[in-house]
View (cartoon, rainbow, N blue to C red):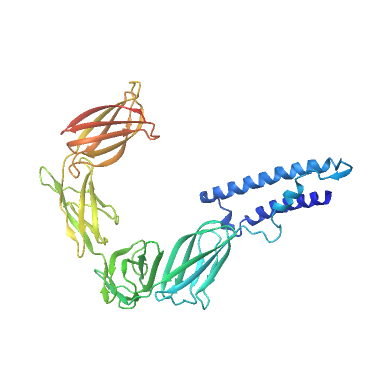
Length: 437
């Protein structure tokens, strides 16, 4: 029985070593701590502690030697046999997982030669065989970003790797009959050669697909055999200035040809900014768009601005300059050759703030101020910060007159307060008592 106890001890020690080795990084990138692996690591550590404690207890019992019971040698400890039975074989233990990827076309036919690879962690690469199958093995458990590339297109998605198991990953790269073609050019210099063109299809629940080509000597590009869907067409690099991205949405039907040209240097949105009272041009106004694409410009001496190369869509446009209120214009539609948006800025009022803490004492420090007009689009809508002095006084000078909801809060979110205010021309003072949140 002593021998059986020693075997049980050895099995436990080998299991601990196997668990640790199986979860060692397989490449330098995997040694980086990642939050999503914390739960798995905690479970492994708990199991190791449990086995270590049991191992120490068995060692102590073994050191005490065998005990005589009714004239025979009894097992010590009695449960050694039970422990040995539930310990898995120490050889061949592998807690990593495998992804078996099968790539087919829209008709279900296998696609051989497709490149399969993982990104970021456990970086591996494989190529599908004649059956369209490839395996990525010994992957650490958790979510892994898997990509597929072939002549039929690109697919990518996050897949959950399960420890000690093989997960089947079916991928369908549907080949359609639609065509997207066009020309990339510059408004002043003409067609652009060598621009990288990407046509990206995001298919919910089916991963992403991206098709890529380059423009020829005449700036032309062409994508064929496309499935129907909503795509985004982008152009970067080549003769385009560094950091410049041309982008447009493309709706692709089940068949036929869609022509979509991209032109750099196109004025998508332009206009003139003037004083609401005098009509005089206002120079140095910052004009900026928000989603779906951010662009910015500054008005010239005549109050004129231009925003170039915007993606078609609906925008919020922000106007801001010292001495005037920050104003938003919502629901600005941009499409085709662009549009004109003139704007009349109103002189800013001054908002004086007196802030107190829950005990009624002056609040000293930084506050977050959220300004929301009671009627959307009729006033300043902005989030900003103000600093209060020893008397709890602060000031904000870029609000236009109007009816507002003013929300104040500390940066640690422990105190907050709300005030309904009418801000008139000139100066307006509001008082707020902050309360615990």
